[in-house]
Image 1 (cartoon, rainbow, N blue to C red):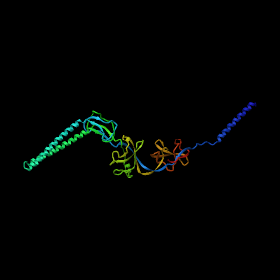
Image 2: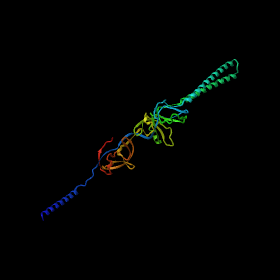
Image 3: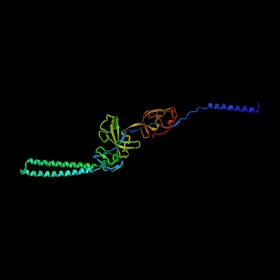
Image 4: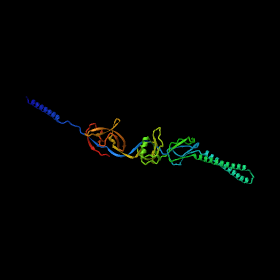
Length: 373
């Protein structure tokens, strides 16, 4: 065998030994296991919290007035702009007053005439009293004079009432703000004919106060009564109550409850009087919350622990062997960042708060402790 062939055989033998050695080394190593998933966990928090009731609500202005003309005539002047704020008593519109001024003058003249007739009739009756004593006239004549005087007095009273009516109609030509607030769209402009009680000029709402109008069913009504919140008549028991429009809370107090159950809607109507809040004068939808003077123990978890699968809600928990398991739960209200758990958990369960997207049933867990907030 030549030198080159010997060298080639030596290299091949070394390579074969190396391959066999590598195979034996791989076969003899233990099979690798997955590392536990590090998660934050905590037990549910049980706390005594004042019981609350929530209802859909609709905000209305405390005062809302539709301004209509009270006399017929042509709109002469508009003293305000649409959407402007006005004070009670401010002049808003003026109807042409000239026909009403003329009517008032006619009534004044009629009153003067009636007053003169009454004075003349009274003088005749007084003279008749003297004449009847002297037997110069009969008692029948005296009665006639007394009737004439009483008729003249009635005519004067009628003329006075007609003058007051004419002056009142003249006053109605000036349409003033009955309340302080904000005007809506002005529907009639100068020169338009307005009809008494038919021609709406604009609306005026109180932009400083509002109330939340909400309805409750019979079960909720009885619960409020038994909790001492509602009585037979106002004032109602003072409780924490507010309207929430999704952006902020507006505190208020109960001011009204209906006197009967509505058989059509199967509800009672209640009102929550809100404090001065100009932005609430516009109609909007939100929720009224009533905090009852009773409390109960609730099981609470951070809301982030609750997961959704189709229509079910569940949380990941750590089983006794330290693996991840699902627990189907029924949830309740949200208190800040914590969610009420109604069913599905026990106080001793350990709930996973983080890395839920990495978990599968049976995943090994390693706890990073996190205390309840």
